[in-house]
Image 1 (cartoon, rainbow, N blue to C red):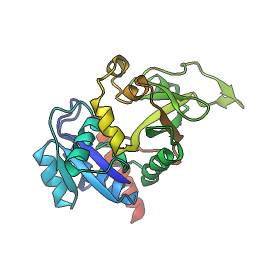
Image 2: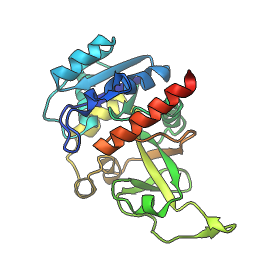
Image 3: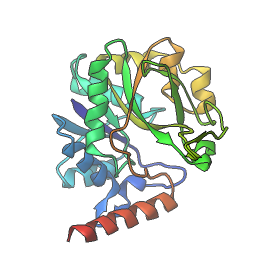
Length: 252
């Protein structure tokens, strides 16, 4: 298993977020450390920006420079696979460069899920939603699966619905939040990148819908450990800084 971390400098809501300080380390180093803790055979940072490359090399990361024209992290990873000549059968885990609180156990779990579901070309993860506001939040991606654990659809809308149900006097699970962590074979990534984007992918702004559109399967595991907050906005960054600061004080 190799972990590849796509990281770009440009970000509409938080420019330069990969290089933001998070309790004494850059955000990208925090993410890199999560990948190293997973026991991956190698971890590669894929970027299109020399500033990210230079900082990453100071903490010993392997960096692969890629085009500025990619529309998604998966397309950036496809270029890394081509540049490095990675074998088609190697398992690649796509860890997004803004996930400093991603559990290392979940990285290995999605790779194991891919191995267990031989009819799937992609494996990913989900976590139960119990808060109506989270279900209704378009920034939170939701997923519905069939009885075998294969994805039926991903959406920013509340799916299967926003109706509240009761179980034993408390709110039951309302749905599942998709965790943006992917495992796939290197050969599939190249094939995926060759496919034209589909209409649903463009409407939802969710690249994984391209896989379903072309009739392929995505295996989804329920996360053994819930991931922490990803960083998309300045407020997210503040919260993550507070969490890491609090945890560091507990370790003293």
